[in-house]
Image (cartoon, rainbow, N blue to C red; front, side, top):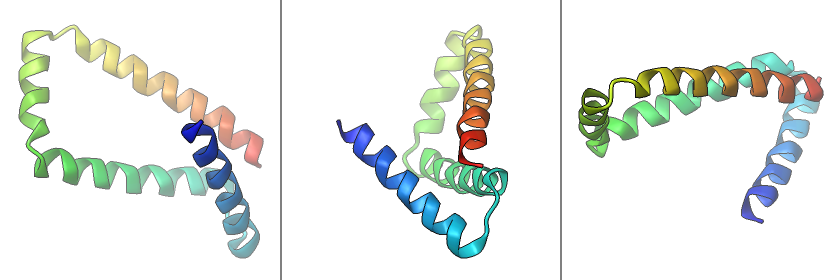
Length: 86
């Protein structure tokens, strides 16, 4: 339920941004991802989670392929979502 509410809010906010600033879908996707990466990068170091990640990957190195595939499929899915926005 909460996910649907935030999806609805995000869609509405994106519509307002597109109307006010004539933003293109892929530019919005790029900007959103840059900010997300920045915050995750800061938080993963600030909370010390980077060390847990390092230990986990060292213990289970095959998980790197799974993380790569997750990132690729997420990028493809995000492409489809943002193409519907255009």
